[in-house]
Image (tube, rainbow over all chains, first blue to last red; front, side, top):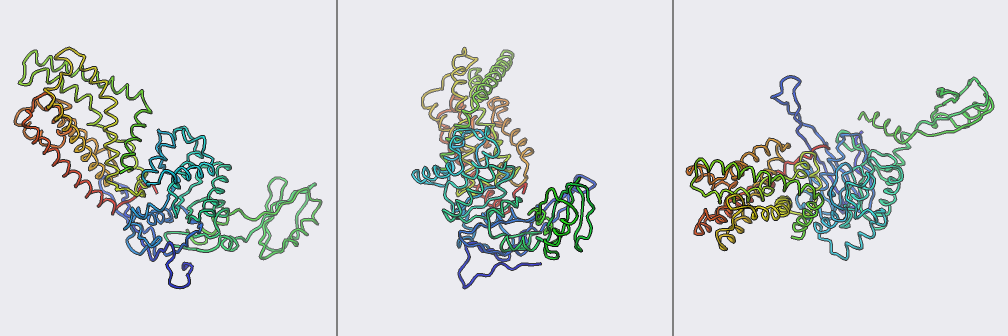
Length: 333
Length: 263
């Protein structure tokens, strides 16, 4: 199932425009026998990838491990050069006008650190200020804005090594935004964060995107991030773009299962449920699974009520993680 | 320029974060200095060499005091290449070779300044023939300082070149082990170059390894006459230019065929 990028009207260039990009990596593998010789294998990381992103969008970029998400981000940020295809970001080719390009973008690689381990966070920030040549006034204003939004105030003088993971991630994000980039790449920014930190981070991203119009491309495995933040989502698998559109529509397509959990006041036998319902037991609770497209909820409820007096009843859709897992399975990822 | 200068300030802050390590380094280097001088004194007691023992002692102390300039690789930088943390540096609006050069230079300079000052003060207090003697003269001292500065630029360029090769081999250990061996031997740290056979010296002193410490120390003690200073400085400058150009070229090629490790 190949998906064409959403076509735009007229001839105007999109802010980010990727056309027919192919990227190959050579992987050396050890042979099963003999340590001296290695086999070379070429991995086709991105296959004819095309996509468009407009200024001010907040786009979720998902796909299983090894799908090519990080590779895309690295190409868009000018670190890697694709073997084939064209890429422009704001009219610039990232890997050709590298210095000019990276001045305008911010990147957060969730599992790496750009801040210096041994020194207070604000010293790392000062270095970033000098690297990006942010004027002092603008820097102070921006730093104040970011430290407030990310609740970093007290941490600035703490060496990074004394910060918790969540504090570190907030500091990393702050560091990537000090030069007020027009485009922000977030590569798994919520990895390893607790619930409070996650929610705070999402609020902040929404604010940054809404207030400043920063274009954000968010790569994550946390589906909550995507549903909470972005209306548009792109799904990548085996280096191909498999879906590009509204998160809502994507979920609707795979949202084909409801589970009613019901517990009775006395032991009962369930019978006469509509065709297509599946029943499982978990202790005293019956789990009745049905498809909302095939069976009306009323019919199921009617049968459940007739079986005996109900002590407790909940009906839930599948979690987003389940939906995505099924989607990956069906797309054969 | 501000970015590159900022790197220096950062390195100074890093050095002052672990004061215990600085003290430990000083004690270790002083210990080595004393042992080495004792060994050369014992050797001289049996069979004096052409170079006076006072010069040998000065040579040893200056080598020990600036050891961090000679042999200090930034584990952060090497680790970045190995684990892919270099990705962040690649998306900074700076000249990459220059950025790394500044980091290496800052590491060598800031690291050794903190250690050299107390160590040299200590070595000056030691009795004659055991400690550091005064320079051959004020002009000699000035020439030695100029040679030290140029030597530092040269050595940093050499190390940045090694860094460029590390980006290709992806693991720094082999490269670094070889580099350390060559540096320790041909810089005069293992054995003062002045004690090598004369025919060897003619070649060794031309190598870039000899530029950082051997060249300035000889000017300091007066083993190299002042009239030789222009030639020495010129050689250092030539090496620096050659190594910087080679490094820039290698880094440029590297950037084109880069792979970021670890996803």
